[in-house]
Image (tube, rainbow, N blue to C red; front, side, top):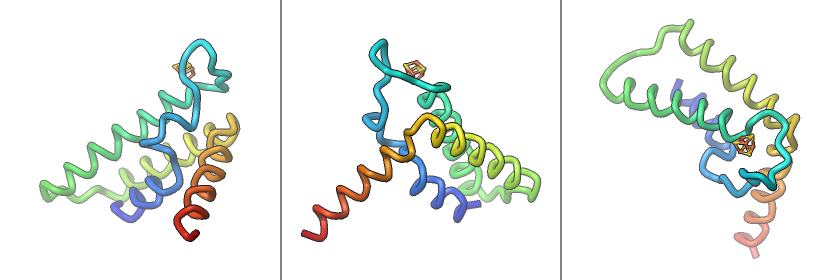
Length: 97
Ligand code: SF4
């Protein structure tokens, strides 16, 4: 579960609200803000549950994975992921310069 959470954190702009414009000027397909909040809430729940010694069941891991896949698809459709990846690529270029 923690490995999955790590992958999701890397793949999705959970703490990067600037990757999309939220507000009347936004041109949203679906609601990226809500999708990301959904994933963020699940991550928060599982991180604290695991910290308290709880072990997620296989079905719970698979339910979380399914949610992330669906959100990932939604973000890809709205172009958010592409923008996020471009932004990350730009940042790593500046890091290595
Ligand atoms: S659809 Fe969601 S992300 Fe888009 S402006 Fe509305 S609240 Fe923000």
